Length: 412
Length: 174
Image (cartoon, rainbow over all chains, first blue to last red; front, side, top):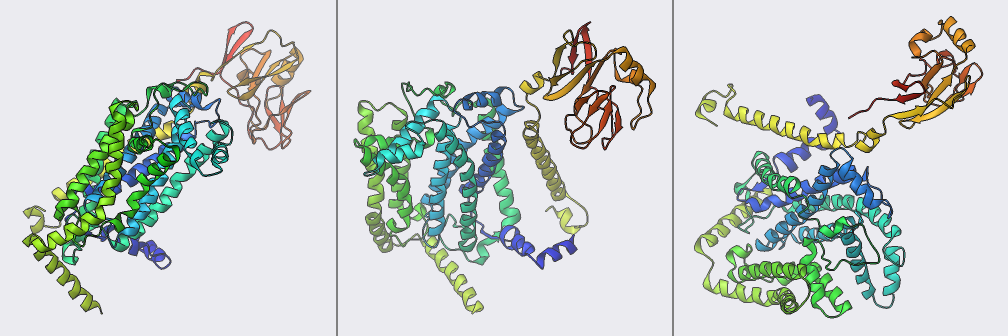
């Protein structure tokens, strides 16, 4: 065995990789369970790819066969029901995990220097994930699938000058049809592998800048511990908890995330009385509906997803750490979380009466918080500097930076 | 680590036990989770439901051969003449020697899977048996290999006579 390893090592840095990036990878010792969600996202990605490949073995991407082939999977394929429910529940789990991963990054300020590229590759991953989920949702060819795709492809009508042509091009026809279904299937199969590629870039960036930590302070060597066994154990424990919740939904509430109307085959002549997107799109959908203008709504919705990328520029504070040592920012964060939940609620309800106003106010707050951040963070910075950081934080920052400096001197 | 392990590192202690138990449980979990995926690649219930075929023999004249489909495969049914029966009962000295009596339930009816045992082509009917166009294997009227690269006689499907003139090929599964 060791002979084989040295043969490989002479040609490929396998042992070095295992040692430096897996077992001995230096990890801040104070990581909380909020740092589990990157690993969980990776796990769900693998789960979705495997279950998806096995579903594709039985699924037929043809408008006249698709709905029945899903029923075939549910009734006739051995464990087809299980694989499909793992895949459909997995989509929701993926977004749940990613949203928590993002919330953690926002709360602890992990998007700040030097981790901007992690944040931006993450933003790319979010877009890819949304596109993949959207295209996958068409494949069962139910009423919600059909009309969801109808509505979302229609958004591209907002393209200046050539809007109508773009929509026809996207659909490969004058309405959602067989051509749309086959291309969505092809791309739904391709995109996960693009996600894998971007995840690798995300991880290379991570292993260059290393994990952030709850203190928000760059930790010196004395406060780092090897990834294995400390964080392998922590990650797998978290995975166990995740799987218990996940399996509860798969086995006991498998239809929870599936709209009842999607059990009716697609009918191009009749829209369901109340169409809603999947829960993970609801806040963005609510923003779209809040703007009483097609182009304006599309821009607002696109911006609401993409604005996260601006966080490293919007946050002007020089105080280390995220919300933990920054009271103003902490309030901003919680208002944002509540606002997103309100938007999600509004998005799930029919746009009538007072809910329209609530949606518009929440949309205003959503963007207002991002707009407020540069001023607020500068103000907060000044206020905190004048008032002085908590004594123990000051001491910690000093001792850690001294350690790091000492080590840097030694190395030069 | 317990004090015991610190004093005596050679002796496997609680840590070793916990690691092993965790590994075994995780391994069993992965195997269990893999099973539905492996199983999903086996024939689905709608395919299994089609695992048998009922054939009416009434319209096959004496001396005539008919090809029917069973599980997506061709099955040759030959209504043998007394001369053909006499001839195949004489010779057993072939590549895969089997007496004709063991290959039929009723002497006048031969039922064999119509796939060459060499590489699975469908042999075509020739006056004294079958001839495979792919690599030239020759079978007699008992479906036994006479010459060519095929190693075995044509395979006998499981079948039973439901009535005098009806057979059920295959066995219900699942």
